[in-house]
Amino acid sequence: MAFDFTGNGFKPFEKKLWLSSPTMHGEEIEYVEEAYRTNWMSTVGQNINEVEKITCEKIGCKYAVALSAGTAALHLAMKLAGQELYGQSEANKGALEGRHVFASDMTFDATVNPICYEGGIPVFIDTEPDTWNMDPVALDKAFEIYPNVKLVVMAHLYGTPGKIDELKTVCNKHGAIIVEDAAESLGALYKGVQTGTFGKYNCISFNGNKIITGSAGGMLLTDSKEAADKVRKWSTQARENAPWYQHEEIGFNYRMSNVIAGVIRGQYLYLEEHIARKKAIYERYREGLKNLPVSMNPYDAKNSEPNFWLSCLIIDSDAMCEQVRSETKPLYIPEKGKSCHTEILDAIASINAEGRPIWKPMHMQPIYRMNPFITKTGSGRAMTNAYIEGTVVDVGMDIFNRGLCLPSDNKMTAEQQEVIIDVIKACFE
Ligand SMILES: *Cc1c(COP(=O)(O)O)cnc(C)c1O
Image (cartoon, rainbow, N blue to C red; front, side, top):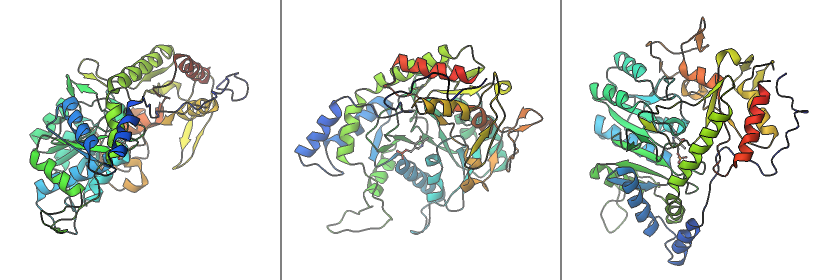
């Protein structure tokens, strides 16, 4: 018997249990109030100065520029890298016009869309199974196929640092600039160093579901003063130093609000606490699910300390019930002793909790279906199947097929989590 949606006897939670929702503490509203009281209801003010300073201290970068979103930070990182590599483009053209850029494949689309904002063409690099991030072997293959590429955008999925040393070695060998998308991994460490410091230009996010939040917001991090100054200028409509509005470059309205910065300023006090809670959630799942044919999203315990933003599980291949997915709908056949992401997500939803499928790989997204995709064997594109004769040939799709994100909210109690674990167990009965 698989999960019985009528008779398992699980009582739905009274209040919905979210995947990962904002957790406020009190200081946030005081800083917001301060902005209100002092009338700095603007994209200028003390909260902005403070969160930039705090970020530099925590992360260990020289400059942090507060922006309206992580996506805005990634956009301006693409512009910086593009101008550096290919020179200043005509005003109405993107800085990456027609250029290929290597990008993580298993990530949120905000990692890669900014490549296109600047006219570039994302080339997706397959995922390795050890941390679910960009595969250095596949990246090396990609440089063989596209030797002229000079820019690599890499994300740290679900707060787990990727194989940074190996990826850096490959990028250095080919003289490529790294942009790190640390939107999901704020506070995570690789060999004792914070993510968001390994690329030339790096991005973090304070979106509502991230480890700490301002309700929105993001930052570009760099050690280059020149780059930080440019981003500050571009993000405030690229005004020249003149008594009137004078413009020599295309500008953007990307600066962070001082009100939002107030929320972030309050949240920073709790970053470590949030990470500790997320880690406890991860470990409770790992313990509670250990006798099932599943494992947790993996990380390199020797070299990295994730922020455990989202807990995920992946089902053993031989414990998967039959399933198919169209572009928008899943179907599966329940089977004794087996399960699949749809069954587990539906079961979790039936008790008023929120899980989510694994982020669908970019090379399988209709918008990016025609873009190149490079696997570790150097082949890739138009994969209709993640497996050939039982062998995984598309690691990202394999994880998408067998994995799912579990409710990982900071405010979830141990008792609530026990119920989730029991529900997952019932799916495999
Ligand atoms: C959330 C997220 C972003 C975008 O950040 P916003 O602040 O929402 O614009 C970028 N990349 C990844 C991997 C993310 O998870």
